[in-house]
Length: 455
Ligand code: G6P
Ligand code: MN
Image (cartoon, rainbow, N blue to C red):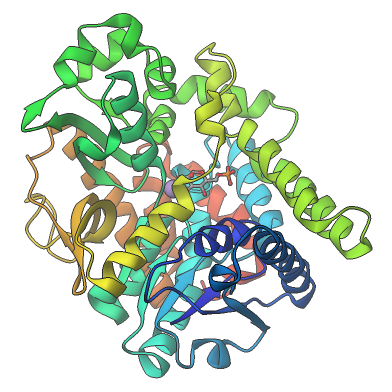
């Protein structure tokens, strides 16, 4: 089975490869093709993967020791030929672009986060045309392939690609899985035994229940302050607010519920997240190219530092300390992707929280709107499970943000600046049409990739 990774020179590719190395089952991936625009990054990541494969081969009996063969290419069409699965994890404009999205937004007093608010819109405006171009190539060259989209803003990008690939593209995120796992742990329940009632859009969802053998355990958690504040989201939002909501929000809702403080913390921070990651990754890729340190060791050190500093400003706003040790171990991101791929490839029935087309799941949205909900997965793909409707306040946010996403897609399709301004102005975290216009000016001046916005 052939897996193609778009953005194959990306920093998180070794996580995926590590998960693949752990998969010894029948029908596993035997061939991995890394596609990237940047040959130097491909070569650095190729060296990390080679070392991962070597260390596995050193410790395993020979019958298991055949790691997936890795090839690298900067030719998209060649990468797609014969692919059974395509992972799309691209970053249009690079981390420099992410840092600019943040800087320009913060200068106007609004959030620049890569998936939320103005920053997410700027990133979406840059990414959608490229993702659509890729979707078209996949539809032409590998129409049978399943496409797993990691590219942020994941919900928006998945929906844009689904217009060309239908239900063959599925978006993934590890935040809801992590949330489910943390809530289960706080309840003393094994995550595999729990049915997580979660619904919303990507980075805009709520856990409304956690059922074990048909009984909702969330009320028990809500009643126990110590347990409720024993995990990341509980500490981030505080027991009182969780009780008011009657649900545990995705960590990204911190930007919505504590906007003023989040903006202030971001403005005061020494560096934005994008600038930090830009510098960090530049050091990593240079160090691997120079050969100063074994590539796998350099990668793992960098990864650990990235995990430790994830959402640091939000944690500072909430006055909570460092992340829990169990949250620092990665496993979410690549395990969701692997579980999804396995379920499809081997028809292993499973339930995962994924980004798929709504059909009739949330009645306030149309059938083609991509939403994030639990899905049953089998060889025919991911099928959203019917869930209870969202309460009004969540419905309001979900509809407002979906309207923004639709304007981004309209702008990407038509090149209309008015649509781009409308996307920015309609976002609940952008508080003035004037600011929306100034933001677009700022982004147009910064990003050559937005040159298509002419009309
Ligand atoms: C979480 C989010 C992802 C995001 C990742 C890394 O897992 O769900 O969407 O890509 O964190 O965030 P970072 O700020 O380190 O790039
Ligand atoms: Mn995510």
